Image (cartoon, rainbow over all chains, first blue to last red; front, side, top):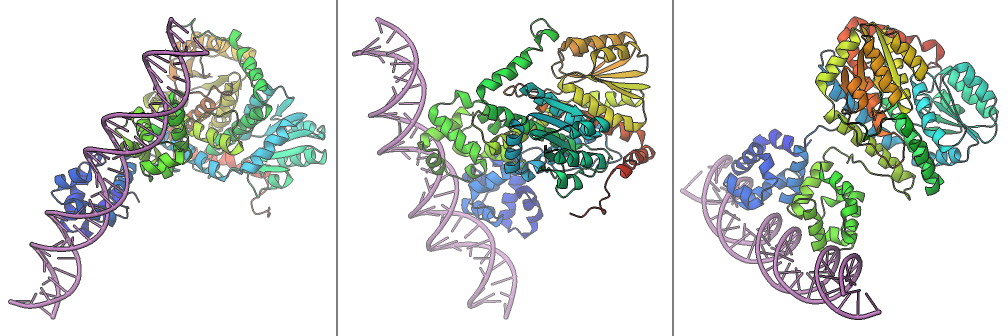
Length: 285
Length: 285
DNA sequence: AATAAGATGTAATTAAATTACACATTAATT
DNA sequence: AATTAATGTGTAATTTAATTACATCTTATT
């Protein structure tokens, strides 16, 4: 509970003078955080120690600490919480909710993701002879995106969203190859098979999936995201964003591992697009 | 712009000592707001006036005022600031930075996105005879993802990442068709052509792209995200995540517009996957 | 009405932040 | 390479703010 709420809630337990202080603060909280204890005391027509005691009653260390808490209460914006979209939400409401839920999911993912595993995954990827990205359904586009990132590194990369192609590719894998299997639930049978086949052919299998899932069992390395999926809409949303960010992280780790000279190579890839684009200076709105 | 972002942005314009202060603050912002100027000076191994000057450089009245601002920046739980990945960052550092930059980008996108335009886009989409998603490069996977969302709605959806197919598809479009062109920069020539062709054939063209770009000029409706792209890595990262979230929003708007009965349909689509998955109860780790 | 418990204010004390100034470092110019 | 100006940084003094200790006043209870 933030300080502002606390003040409102405990208005009754205040003494007469404390009440005066509370009233002044609630009336102009924004002014309060920029006032000295003397100024506030004067506004509330009480003594400075009274203000101080008021602050302590609210479980803060003193007046400056109280101002800090108050400032945080006043900071606009609600914390990013997973807010569910409701039947009668207007565009403003559902837009805000989806942004916030996604941010909340990323925040959760950030806290849950296992850094040492990421580091090992980067290790494995940098040493790969060939990298394959496999996903089905919504995860297929994540695999696609991963391909788009990693092909820039001048490493053989394949990406299939077709089970048959995935299977054939997995059967052909060999030691030194890395197969990345992407699945939020980790319970897609076909993808589990792919992981098994790849492992049987000595490939290293990285799973971007839930711990404790059938797919995770088949993987050499599991990157779990533990995103609370929003089941309201029957569509994967936040989970897939988290997967993408994880791909970004792996790609970044990869480039950092490869060093500066390598980075220039990336620039070249980007610059190669120049011909296909309208130049910034060519175009004037 | 909040203080924390300000610090990150102006890191280069700081002097050596100010830089030390900035580093300490960024490393433990939560501690900073509860420290005295003396404590912070000691942590940063500089003198107290240096800390004070640092605060003033950031347009605050002094140290206490600075702490107030910092407290507000931190109020949303975690500081979501666009932090750039550095050469010598370890896995912990770059993971945190990428998560945070992405969240910061989403936060920026949320504030910039135009709700009425979203609403109109949803309008247009719900009335579409056929919906096409086109993107190239990194935006291709976004288009893919959009297809994966919208095909569930039982509307004809196409998605091509091949210029020739896109072109043919655009030429065949007719009134009532909606073409969604996705491009972060909005300067990809081929995609601009697609938009033009589609418009010439009476399709409604929605652009998920930057305002003030050649592509935007060709569109009926422009959804701009204005995400500060992180150019360090020469790869599109945050921008593409924001695009995906926008797709989520459009899809959500779509289902809400269609009402409850329609939602049951979505459930059916999801349930249809059951056969291809390991049941939750079948599997015990 | 007396007394104790709590509330409030005054004045003293302590702590914190800021300013003024001196010294050091760096960059520029000869 | 030496000199000077400009900028950056720290020390010590000063000012400001916050807290504590204590005295006084209120209010409730007997």
